[in-house]
Length: 253
Image (cartoon, rainbow, N blue to C red; front, side):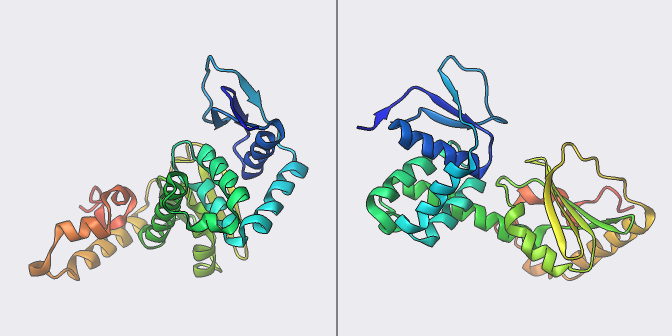
């Protein structure tokens, strides 16, 4: 019999570490009160169990998902893990329990609150990653393309392929300030690595010149009598304007 527990699982914040939490939940026949990564953990009065990442355990869980629920379920969970959804680990655990019980049909159980919330979170993740493929702006510093973003979701794994293919012969860095991670690329090779509090270099005269040209182009192509600020804000949310060259006016003059 599965019992609800007041224990909090604490894990290392990796996908494999989370899968070990799933393994622990089944092994102990319990559903924890919460699952929290080490980076987000705060002191609590509730009992805490440290879940050590064991790749044999995580591999067993990962391999079982396509067999029980189909290949799309594993990809869906990998995406869910990248979302900014509050308590995503608990929702993912509950999703898996439904999946092991109902099989592949769990992927269409939209009337279920757990499934519905996870699907909405993944939809938001994919929407944000799609937007940033168009909204991300690079600057040149010492012959390296550098960009800074503040996404709500952890999108670097989803946008990496797009930019590595588009700038295949360049050297570039995309810094995710929200998650203190960076996508670092050199021709035909990339890594996503931790990078804390990266300070962007000041733009030199040449960089400022090209920024002015871009803003001039942006303002020139606008059709004044068809300006629709509401439509622009809808298609280009203000959350992303901070790092978009066309909305940075401090060095215009």
